[in-house]
Image (cartoon, rainbow, N blue to C red):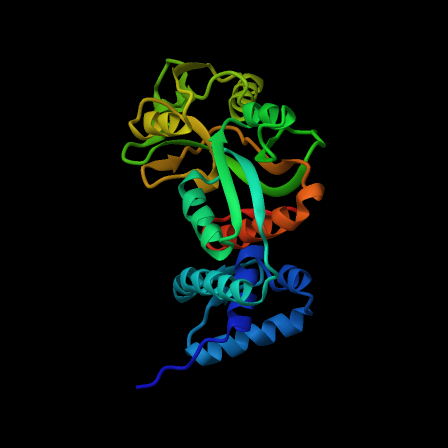
Length: 297
């Protein structure tokens, strides 16, 4: 039996609708009318003979088949974009010393940069992973060319590239809500955090203080992996971007909202646009295929 080929254009439309949460929003991203988006989704469903969205008067949701397709669609789109870029993108070469905040999708960063190196073999990329404020200080001293790091609320420095929801997280194999007062626990909420200077630490402490929730830091590590390990072990609760969650972590309900975090590029991005633009575009597309981040407006 010969199976039908999937149209990349239809898959891109489908993935955009899923990520934007609706036909109108997806149309705004793709430059299409709502009816044109709806027609593309219908064509895709006709090819697959399956419904990919469950439509109700209140919301649009993926069907089980749609959830399965979205995984494949992101992989296919990423591979398509990488192949097209490799074939037709203008040659890019040079040296770029890049600092990347450890909170920036750590489990995805190395594979993404490895693929970038294969796609742009003439770019000599030197990467240093660390804490945002330390990397930005190194950039100001001239030791790094660019930094992808966190931007504090209200800050205008740098060029925003992503926003991401923050979440309280704890061990997935033991209900992390056991730490909350309504679970009968009288002790303060135990926290695992990076050292002072971390924006996520400051946000967590301020949020808990405003909500009058007793808390104490019981574990401090200079490494994000150390903080994650403490949370996975059930020692404490911590704060992470949703893209950073591992299989050993689960979100903790019942704590106040932490809002979003902004990721931005700091340094002379305009002066190095020939190198920066391909890198940022590559990271955006790769992350869109793997994690639920929201592109900056």
